[in-house]
Amino acid sequence: MANSTADVVIVGAGFGGMYMLHKLRGLGLKAIVLERATGVGGTWYWNRYPGARCDVESMQYSYSFDPQLQQEWNWSERFASQPEILSYANHVADRLDLRRDIRFETSVTSAAYDEASQRWTVGTEAGDTVTARFCVMATGCLSTSRQPDFPGLSRFKGKTYHTGHWPHEGVDFAGKRVAVIGTGSSAIQAIPVIAKQAALLTVFQRTPNFSIPTRNKPMDGEYEGWWKKDYPQHRAIARTQRAGIINSVNDQSALAVDDAERLRIYEERWSSGGTSFMASFNDLSVNKASNDTAANFVRGKIRAMVKDQAVADILLPHNHPIGTKRICVDSHYYETYNRANVRLVDVRKAPIETITANGVIVGGQEYAADIIVFATGFDAMTGTLVGINPHGRDGATLAEEWEAGPRTYLGLMSAQFPNLFMITGPGSPSVLSNMIVSIEQHVDWVTDCIGYMTSNGLTAIEPRRDAQDAWVEHVNEMAFKTLYPTANSWYMGANIPGKPQVFMPYIGGVGAYRVKCDEIAASGYTGFELNGSQARQAAE
Ligand code: FAD
Ligand code: N01
Image (cartoon, rainbow, N blue to C red; front, side, top):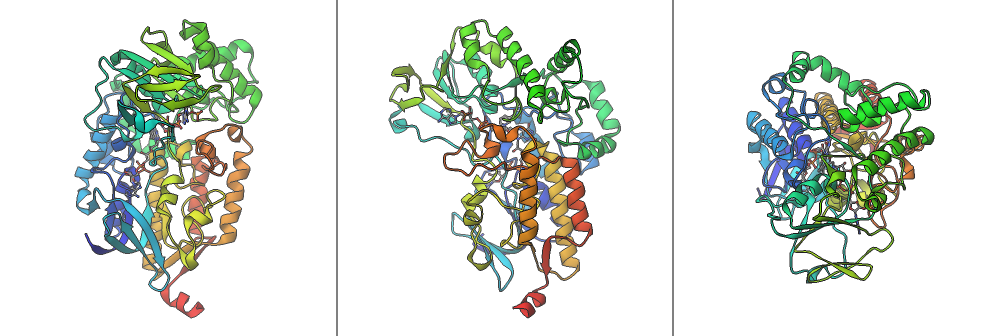
């Protein structure tokens, strides 16, 4: 690759980067994608842990831009597994002939803007560069995995794995004593599967989470047919929804109905399964009293599923309103604790002290393990971008600009960084939504913007600082109308020691956010400054 040039350099070949490349080709531009993995798929390439599965229904968690693709592709289950989603990503890459413009095993380590030429130069670990007018960071919100620095780890004689970096050849747990550290979404999916294979499974839990059964099942032909018959219309509706998902929100308060009716509704949602439980009522994320009714219902279910009530006590979440940490979904998670080969260790009061050659020490007791699985999450939303640390105008660096938390205009761009776009960046609905809907919306917006600039002889776009400040304020204001900021979640950056605690995604809803982005574009990009190279030279 050495030193290449292109119109656009894209970092990342997950669903964001793949679609971005396809759209830019449609504009007749030359785009190069740099990807550190050996293949496409992003999240679904890296997170191959047992039980990994989507929590958005298959019929909705897929691209909508290609009518033939969505008709031809058949999902085998209600909620797709990681291998199936990865096959889908590979199928799309083949179908659109994407790989010829993707440089795999290429890790981007730097990005710098040159004001004179109005171009970005992106540098790789191998010392190569790509120079382009535009740079698109399609680097993902959950792509920098995090493994806490447990003392003694280097002494451990067994094998260690992180759910976000799972080996391609898989892991054989048969006859092994396995320790899982963490009880977030990844662990909750992996634990029931590992428990069936391992000789002994010890789960180290610091914070219990709320989890809803998925009720996953083979794809129902009639349901698939219903979607496919009117796919474009269904997709259009999904784009207007709060989370980019059609999941029939019950538009009444949990407090507007009597106890019997409320219970009936919760039971109905619980039996149908999945995250639509959180749409049982319209005020679960804003009204603590309403939220308590849902939390109490789920706590009751946990008690009923777990036979040993002392274990159930440890599993009951009490330190955050339900849904304010990302709601988990599972297949027989709580029932797994009824197995004789599974034990739960509460590390809230007595944290993990050290890892030894043979296991994990908590409260002075050693829990023997041959394998440790770290299901300890990600430096979400900002970790990957700040890791690259783009250098923008006037010596600005992203790490400094975002020192007190991410600052963006619409989650798409940041002041001081002209021509640098982010796909599902902080300040956009991103992780609070069906991510493929949000990815498509951002990629379409960025493509239109680059198309507009190209056809108007414009060479640089950058958000105005006042527009960005107003957006950041709006993002905060919306978040603080809800219960979300009351939880120590990764949405708040609370899982990373020293990370500023700011609610990072935009909670105003996918539909409303899209309207806002479209209005801004239609008005000639209000809040952005656009320049032709001559205009900038004249101003200087
Ligand atoms: P990613 O898929 O993260 O792709 C980013 C790519 O950028 C990666 O391939 C990465 O290797 C590459 N990259 C990053 N930095 C560099 C660098 N410096 N140099 C080179 N390459 C780089 N969302 C949902 O909507 N529903 C779900 O059910 C759901 N389940 C999830 C389950 C798991 C286990 C995880 C971790 C996330 C889940 N998500 C889910 C969120 C998921 O990340 C998105 O749905 C979507 O896949 C993101 O696509 P992306 O292209 O934006 O980012
Ligand atoms: O990560 P997490 P994840 N000692 O951060 C614990 C998506 N996703 O990979 O809560 C002990 O949620 C930590 O404890 P605590 C989804 O968006 C979706 O599971 O900090 N424990 C927590 O229990 C999700 O939200 C699916 O107290 C420590 C766990 O590790 C996001 O990805 C599936 C610790 C980390 O949980 C991240 O999920 C998977 C320590 N020192 C992922 N440090 C679907 O189902 C951390 N922990 C669709």
